[in-house]
Image (cartoon, rainbow, N blue to C red):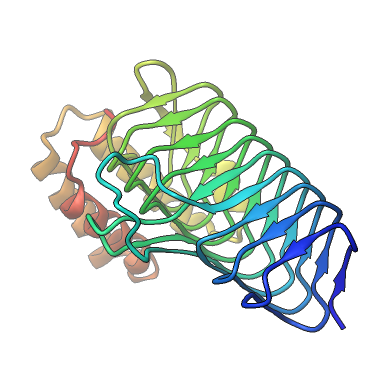
Length: 262
């Protein structure tokens, strides 16, 4: 049987796997689903149409599935979906989606989410990210796999953060951040590329060199974005091993809607 503390309030309509742990004074609403191996600390509130996968660890005083902080929200049956093996630390707040987008706020798998992180409505967080203390994601933000967002960083609504990026402490992010880049500041500026992070993830020297060349095209050689994209596309022709990385960058640049941090 699920291990539910006697002081917890779990609605009979909630669906919990048989080994879920629920701590003291936690409240779980009727539309919540929680997968196997997930542990929930004390004084949490999990409400709305929230689905949580397997083997997550949710610390005390977390709020998941509350109504979005959007004046247009009128109680529509929107959702929050959280994947597997995430760590969610104290005082985090993840809100439901809105009908202005897909109606879903999503958090993927294997994310390390530190205290006081806010994930607003319609945000999409990928896999294996790190969100440090007090990182704040406004509505409709997307965060790619392996991204690292520093503490006290604020991300403007609709901003896209590419995979493998690293954003420094207390950065104000109001434009899209291309994959692989290292940025910080207020206003945000590119400081280099995430070379150490890529090496730790097993990128070969050839792939790291290609990312370095992409950074140079975008930030060092005075090219327009169109010219930089042409130079980046040529990398895959001379180094087939880099094709996936080049495609990731080109697709991101083509979809960037707020301009990129430059």
